[in-house]
Length: 297
Image 1 (tube, rainbow, N blue to C red):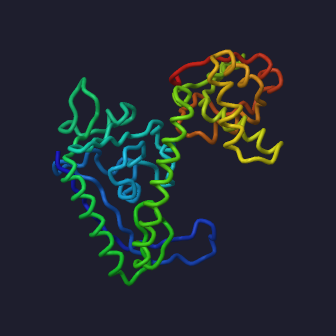
Image 2: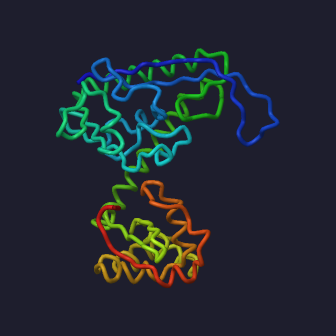
Image 3: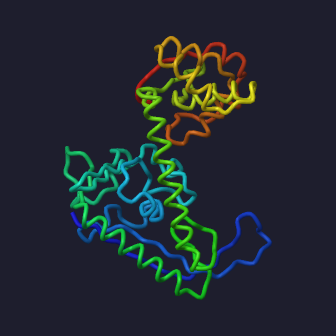
């Protein structure tokens, strides 16, 4: 497959969402939409935006990411609850898409029924396509007489700063990937483990054990004034790795407010219901049933 990008530029009025009294600023909005063999894998408009800065920042580094996402930057807002996986080797780069919601969105010419949703690119061609679109965006940004916004970066600024912003995004992204790889190393199978909580009224929530672990580590960190990583690796993870009974015991020891915080923080898990505002939470929490699973139902 051949990767290319359709770069678009349009002047738009930008209104500061945090200052409604401020006058809108006229800006140049730059976007890049991927084309595979000349076709967009996902047709426009479909409610998604494409995060070109994220794609450029990670380059060839194997990772999970959200090339398609919501305009706010949280993919869960548009129903994307599993990441795309970027795989690479010395010959090839692959984007592996989750079935939901992308199977229904993909152009039929780029997918085969019964086979995984994978876009495969030659490594050299992929690198060349990224270099070309980066050059186009930089050139247009630096030539603009208007403030520039690029992709999801909706803070207008001098176009010449885009080069610096892209370098900062690349540094941050590569550090994030390194940190995430370390988390996978220390969490192991717990990264794919969840706890389902079902209340007597029938409502149900799912929380990732990774977020349970961070909540428990934060408790210890705040109580003892230490960095969260210390209790996470020395105390919390050894307990959770000991088995399902330990995971369930720790989950049951949470308060509803802690669970609610996890539910709303982790947009990667698709929840069945909204918070239980109309019920007696003390009664509901006392009768809640807990179950460990490896995928949220």
